[in-house]
Figure 1 (cartoon, rainbow, N blue to C red):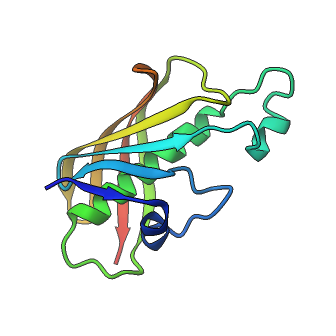
Figure 2 (cartoon, rainbow, N blue to C red):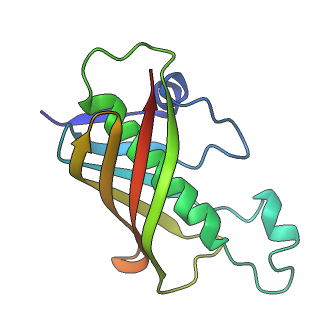
Length: 146
């Protein structure tokens, strides 16, 4: 079963709001398997004023946060019996790598692939790509608050 989520559905699942909600749309979600999300990077993002004014670069830490939000959404669609107000926390980042810069006008494709679940700790292999080229990757752990 493939699920798609629009921004209003995403906002029901995540407590983040602008400027910290970093996923615009879920294109594909296969519970307990993978999620593919989209972040449109626009020049009017507030951090571009200072990062960097003459050569705007989407901060790597925010790419990692966008991937973490993807893991939370995949967890929300995979775990059974979670309340609507469940909060998902970033619990760990391993093997983070940044391969290319991301800037205004790019479409960041965010993929989270399920690795394992132990109790309330979920682990995912994550990749962020622009135009089919890897921009960043990491193993991310998501904790579920019950």
